[in-house]
Image 1 (cartoon, rainbow, N blue to C red):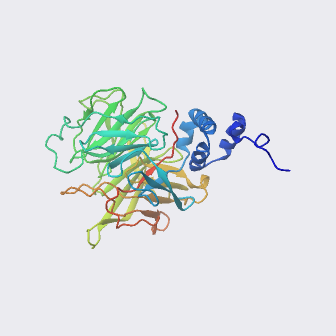
Image 2 (spheres, helix red, strand yellow):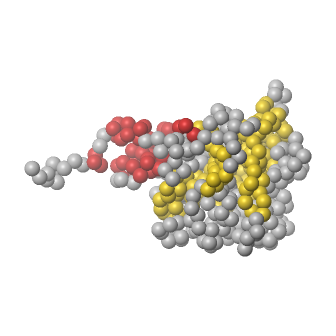
Image 3 (cartoon, rainbow, N blue to C red):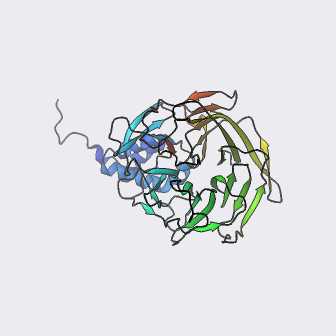
Amino acid sequence: MAFTSESSSDWTCLPDLLLDSILDKLVSLPDQLRLSLVCKPWHSVVIHHHRHRRIDMNRNQIPLLMLPPNNIPAEEGRSLYSVTENKSFSFKIPFFYCKRICGSSHGWLFTVQDNTDLVLINPFSDGSSSPIRLPPFQELPGNQDRIPGVFEVVKASLTADPLLFPDDYVVVAIYGASKSLAYIKSGDKSWTHLHIPYQWFSDIVSYRGNLYAVDHWNRVISIDINGVSDSASGVKVLAPRMSWCSDSTYIVESSRGDLLIVQRFLIRIKSDDNRHVTYRFKIFKLQFNPNEEAERVEVKSLGGDALFLGDNQSMAVLASDFPGCRPNCIYFTDHYLMVAHPPPVYGRCDLGIFNVDDGSFQGLCNLDCSQKHLVPAIWILPTPSLH
């Protein structure tokens, strides 16, 4: 018996509760993204579902690696690589390929415009999430006499998702040749510079209501955003500088709620472009005492976690929650490197997997280093729009 159009099942009319149950079974956010693209009713259900669960989902999801595109024009999109599936797929996103990306946080990308202003873009939105344009940096200390061609913003991060908390998020940026710190709260008209001696900061993270920053010498400071001002009240040094400097240092919250400090060391290899590659990592856990100071204790294991480091907001997941993700490993990509001459807008193809247990390195994915006109790869959480 042939089915007529009247007797055929209308998948667009599945009950919302049934779709919610399906979403509960889909652990992978890429799978949920694919479900949301089936039709408008399903997209609406996915968005409603995420409105109630997005915070927890963001904390318990694995990022995708945004790569140069494979099968679509570069000006229309990028490719997303899944470490658990070991494959990439094309994805159209609303920004031009030639703009520099100086951070990803809570599913948003920080892009630098031609006039050096920061613009936040949600690449997974359906066009309903407008870009967030931030005030310029020109008037901040140390930026008036900047090195020509050197990007003002080295790295930027969010304390919360602007879609969930449109009136209660903070953008923190590392900027300038001295890698200083500045922040701006939602609704502010200008940036606030933090007057902290011996800048050269490398990474920032929001942790239990405060901001924590680390510099290249492993110094760790806490910042009370509610009490901070131009005079740096609310800023406290938790751990002093160490005697050695790393090429980049990251601060990340583990899946167990610990703060980890990861130092990354590069070496220049002889090649046509004299590029740098990573050859070592050192990992420390912060142990807080009653005086709210911290001791750095070197660790040789991540306790089953996998770290995702680069120009993105540093992330950690429990690898056993994601089949195909390797425990006690650091997934890393190219990071910003301050040099005397203007750095290229393309990556140096320094990306891979570092095994903490045995100190070995392994390739991450096949990336064509000859595509020098493309921007570097960056980790990002695949979070659908809430609109």
